[in-house]
Picture 1 (tube, rainbow, N blue to C red):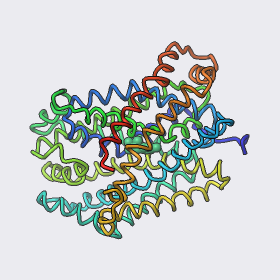
Picture 2 (cartoon, helix red, strand yellow; picture 1 turned 120 degrees about the horizontal axis):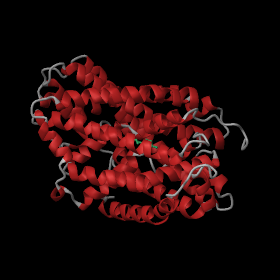
Picture 3 (spheres, helix red, strand yellow; picture 1 turned 90 degrees about the horizontal axis):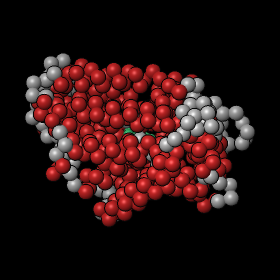
Picture 4 (tube, rainbow, N blue to C red; picture 1 turned 45 degrees about the vertical axis):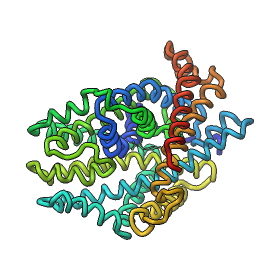
Length: 452
Ligand code: PFF
């Protein structure tokens, strides 16, 4: 089994498309705009970009190093690279657990998006008051069966891609979907910035007002960067194991971070000018895209078309991310539990669906069932974002920075000496000291701030 030949990405574009597909998701188009809205706009954006490039890129490189060096799934990577130090494997297990939990609640929201394509396309928001639009959202999410149906459908489509394997499933799908996503996004941005009164929204997004930035905002920017770049749960370890030996890991990592940031900023450009032009509230939180945007589309010419395109875009972004979440699990089940790919896919998808049903019911029938004051959905979201992902990211950097011999990491970054790697010392300093310190700070602050 250890020597079995594994299929990998066939080109560097394929690798970037797949990993950028993982990074670009609901985190960019749903979570990023409302977080920017809550923490005051431009100043948050600036801090966020600094975190992405200063810490995010070195962390992406670290996960890629682990994956490519070991050629294994996230648990197998720890086992292969540190066979004597079994304790590290607990980090692999934590990553698997995080993937199950994140995939479950993420698919609930992704399923809503699916339904919104249909609602928007059928013109259900047309001529409705904002109260009626909010009511549509709450009627749908509190309903028992309909969100579960869309949740199942979304997981089914994800499984359909993953079962076909890395090249014919993941790489091929991402290579087609990512350029479409970029085109749709540009189209929406053009529509938004040509609206009367759009400049207020652009000012909000791009003019930094540091007085609006709080310590909580800075921490959220770091947390958002981790989530958005799919870090801390072995996703990029798994994808790294499919990256070709001749690909330049620095270039690949910078391209992923740049693509992810570009789409997040474009999402802001598509959303805020429209929100301001129609006098809506930019700080309305998680319901921004479901409750506020339909009003915005309502008030613009060809609103039905743009609303439908927007939800198609959100669905594509979510799908390329759930594909990566399922691949973390399938790679683990195939390599560690020795399952056939098809069985592994069905098994992991079924477990995720079962947990997802509980998350979905958190908005309706199980709304009053709380653990530590949180619904099941809220608990999984909080547990993973506040603890599991930062702990996973911390452990991964410590592993690559201190446990993995530096000769190995240098060898990976320089492709066996073929590339000049003058930045090596800066990278090593970042993963040994800067990143761990920043992650410990978010962990402590996150635990103190969380009401759990
Ligand atoms: N990066 C994704 C997003 O921004 O929506 C979410 C995600 C995908 C997180 C895959 C973690 C992961 F392994």
